[in-house]
Amino acid sequence: MVRLRSSGSSKRSLASNFLDLVALCVCLHGLYGTTSLTLPPHLKPAGQFQFLTNLSSLLTCLVLFFDLVFPFNVPSILLVTVFNLEFVVCSAYWTLLFFFSHFLNAGTFEVSLLLDLEIHLFPYFALAIATAKRRGRAKVSFSLSTASTFLALACYFSYIEYMATFYKVRYPYPFLNGITFPARAAWMTGFALVASFNHWIHRVL
Image (cartoon, rainbow, N blue to C red; front, side, top):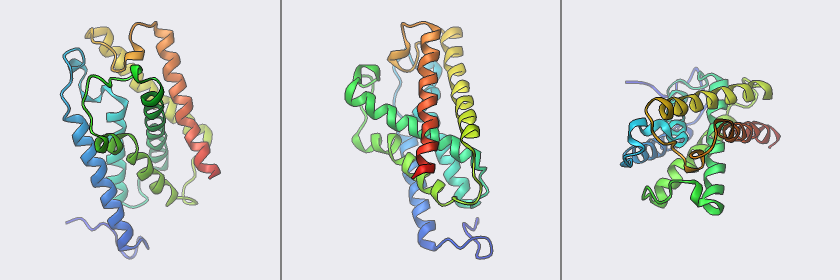
């Protein structure tokens, strides 16, 4: 049986452990819910993790799990990168939903408000708390944070481009369909810039 906290390695209270566990359970429930949704035929070949939301949710669950079991042993650069990804998932999703809903797959899936919050909002706040608890331990520079975030989104972009090219599937988000490769790359670059901005916000606050 894994001991979540040892008295010699951490001063975090039982209440803190419990809240961390609750955060992990909520994120896991959201991940299960979103990956259980039935994909339409034109999206099935690329699988559930063609969506940045689902991929970020999976990474968040892994980071929260390992941070709970092995406190402060998760590499800070990994935590910061996933935190940045969740920021762009959160900010981009709610902005597009309220102002440009036709850019999303809003009519393709029936998603409850609870699931929406579990995958598009709660993970960001869970990682914000996890990051705040690390202040002063292992700082990550803005340049390194930006580089790792751009690399992560470049890998994601490469995956969806590969699936669209070799499996002839549509892109997971409507705004990526019917435009040129440079235009899609511009979208991804914009997302990477927004995601990287999160590091600056968190450091200032």
